[in-house]
Length: 165
Image 1 (cartoon, rainbow, N blue to C red):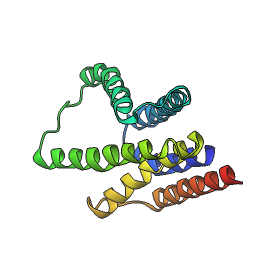
Image 2: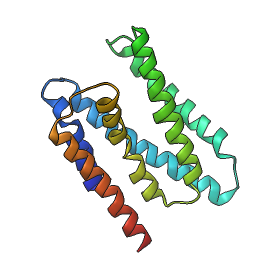
Image 3: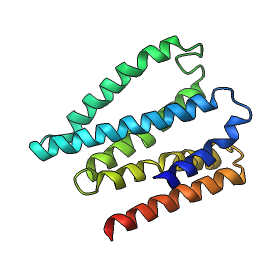
């Protein structure tokens, strides 16, 4: 897990040189990951006691998360809503690919994989974001970020090996 966090830190590291809020973003991302791990543990525990439909349960978790984050969004000095059509498009891409796709896979995998492995796999989201940045947004990705992608993917792979051994 530590290796994966180091990989994610390498992915995020170029932001620290020109973004005053990068540390807050990184710290809140780590806290968000911890909250996600707690949520996944709760989902698994629910399944241990009673066979429950996961989609409605995950929707409730997402609704609670949204309501928890909403005050922070309103207190921010940044614009709350995307300002351009292009921004709306990329928010939709992120929502459909990263959130719906990822949550669909989590719902599918939660009964089949260990929580630790599921958590490691979810750390691939920053790698996917880098790929979207590089391929579709033509954003320059520095070698340190590619190294972070490699370290993160290696950590996920090693975590999957350790779980099966």
